[in-house]
Length: 361
Ligand SMILES: [Mn+2]
Image 1 (tube, rainbow, N blue to C red):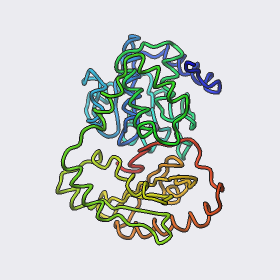
Image 2 (cartoon, helix red, strand yellow):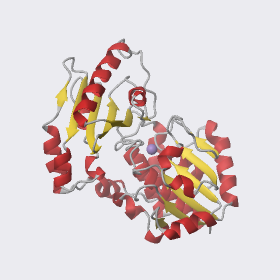
Image 3 (cartoon, protein in one colour):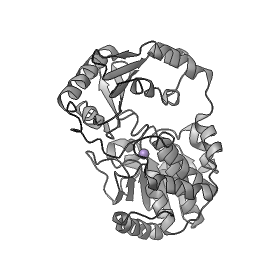
Image 4 (spheres, rainbow, N blue to C red):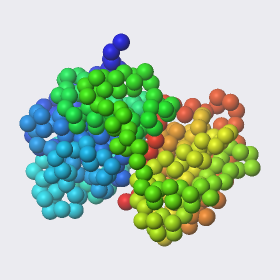
């Protein structure tokens, strides 16, 4: 059976394609600390637009992740947010496409640059506060924004360029935790099959993204694992990234990829937490759920957000104080809200690192 687009997405797809048809200069952007889904969608859309003779550039609020640069064959298409050329390109553009977020706050410094442009929003997060205005193609049931971009390409039958098939495969690969999270559906595998049959190489792409690690990553893991702890009821586990080691090993946020899975995967644990002091008196928390617990609710109670199974928050306070508060509230939350079996519904939407760095510049 080949892939079929969910009927509920049809009218949004038609609207987006109609807008694209009229565009001649497009700015592509995603949320701060862009991930494989955001970068993959940008690479795919960039290729699709250029093939159509539409000029397009990627402008992100934080630097385009090095890990995914191979997806964009022409590096001059990626502009840094603070360059004078970027301002000029944005002023001359007639459309901005925002992928993998729908919130003004998440596009940070790109916001003012594209303020006057018409917008298309392609996103799979539950709506938050401060929604971007524009033509909206959103579905929280999609495993990745890449699934929605695939629907656009599928409707117009390509063009199935290498950056498009690889970008969308990487979007699915990374947002599903290598096709193993609860957001994996038959549709996800059908899309992956279509992409592989059009030239995406699963072994090569997996190797490029996960099959290599700098030594500093294991050294950091060693220090972080030494902090692994679990609540007395066994339902909440947490780990802290030591700021000193992070600094001394010259690590970047890419080196934190997958760390939160260690507390999350402990036997019997329902909520896994990762803490990191990102600045003096400011702590980043990653929340992961193993089951019915909706960590989006927990993250939102601290001013963050994301998905039911994976969320983040930036909380003011030193790491030890934040850790005590978040752990205590998580234990309490599980006790109150998710105590009875089946009382919580975590939903389908999930991502390995969604909206990561929520609120982080
Ligand atoms: Mn995503």
